[in-house]
Every structure is written in C-alpha cells, then in structure tokens.
Length: 323
Image (cartoon, rainbow, N blue to C red; front, side, top):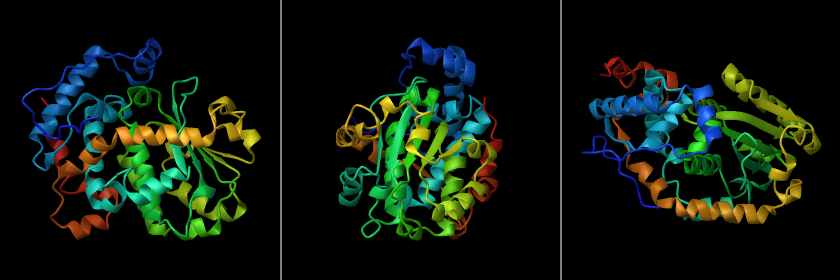
C-alpha cells in the first residue's frame, strides 16, 4: 500500500463510491444518518474547512480518513472538525505515543509477536471488528507504558480506515487472567488521565463494547480510577466478566482464538495480523507528515488536557464559517 497524500488542499479529490454490503448501508442510515447526499456534502464541507484552516499545515483529505471523523460524530460537521483538531494536536503533543507507528521497529515488532494485542480475523454478527488483548503477555521487564500505548496506537490506526468498522464499530476483549502487579506499576496516574482524555475526545473510533475478563482484585482500584475519568457513554460500554465462560455468553466463542474456544490458533491470528500491519506500514508512517501548528506555548499544551487545548488557540478556529 502506497503512502497517502497529506496535502491539505490538493488540486482534486478522488471520487468516492460506497461499496459495502447492504447491511452496512442500512446501519449507516439508521445509526449515523448517512446517505449518499449527506456524505458527499459533508466531505465537501470538511475539505473546504481543512483547506482554510490557518493552523493545519498538512493533513490527509481522502474519504476513508475524513469518514473516520464524520461517522464517529454522526455527520455533525462542527463535532467532526473539532475532533480532527484534537486528533492532530494530541499526535504532536504526545509523539512518543502516537508517532513512528512502525511495525519494523524492533521493540514494537517484538511486542506484536508476543500476542499481547491483535485483531481477530473474523467480524462478529454485527459486522464489528474484535480486538483481542492478553495482558499477561506484556513483559514489564522489557516494555514500558510508552511501548504499550504505541502498539495500541499502531493497531488502532491500522484499522481505522476500514469502512465496515467505521460504521459497525469495534469490540475489545481483554484477558486479564495473568495480569501482574508489575503491569500496574508501569503507569502513572497522569499518564492514565491524559490517555483517557486522548481516547475519548480525540480518537475517531466507534468503541461499542469493552470486555475485561478475570480482572484480579488488586486491580480494582486502578479500574475504578480509569472509569472515573471516562465519559458516561464509555462507562456504559465497559463490561467486567468473572470468567471466560461468562464472556462467552456475550461474545461468540467461535470468533476467539482456538485457545479460547475458536477455530484459529492464536499464533496464526497474530501472524495474519502482523502481515496486515506490514502491508499498511507506508500509510501508517505517512501519518507523521500531518501537522497542525501548536508550537506557540508548546510547554503549556503539553501539560494541558484535551479540553484545555480545545478552548485555546486551536479551538478558536471552530468559529470559521463552513460554506
């Protein structure tokens, strides 16, 4: 896959055609208020807004990228443009988390190889992509919290252009059976708070369900703190299961790795997903070429939340009228 153009005002834009099965078309209409006319007009307005934005220097304007934001915000132009500003900003404020999402980086590749985090091959009955994580496979003697966030960023970014998932959303399944105290020790409360702000305010991802399985009692306080900094909407999409059998009443076990009741061994799932990441490498690396101007008072921005950023110089551009 070739790297994508990040010119914010190209001479022309590629034509877009909706090519998904009817079930996604119906879901887009019912859940997102999307039809051909609304989508075409929204893309046109979004592109004009980006082209006029004085602080956005470079940005992808292709339809799959912009539809991430439009679909997440149900085609509200003000909400989608605000999310794009925040998305571009947090990528620069936290480059150690969101830049250099390179599957060829030895540490990132090694972490992917462990099977800590990967997307499962098949979608569920609603068309949702399932992202699977096994906390016990994270080696705290080798990897840091920054490695963990970067590998999550890599996986998420690799999936976000998939239009099926933009419409149907995502399901996360986290096996915490072998979660260690050392895993909790790599985090600071500041990191958790900043990351929560990034995820819920800046990430164009329709997170439909988050399933935590076999969470040990020593992690209860941390999980309570994480929930406390999430929006009510996201809190209501978090489910805690005391056993794998309990999870299987909600998530079809046939979709899980063979070791959890499915048909495809985990090692094969990981190998398939790694090949997918390798194929997407150029596109993922091109994300670092996008730029929004936040250098003024950069130290201030680095210590601020998404809400602070939105209220400042970047957010002030929201008042720009979109023709």
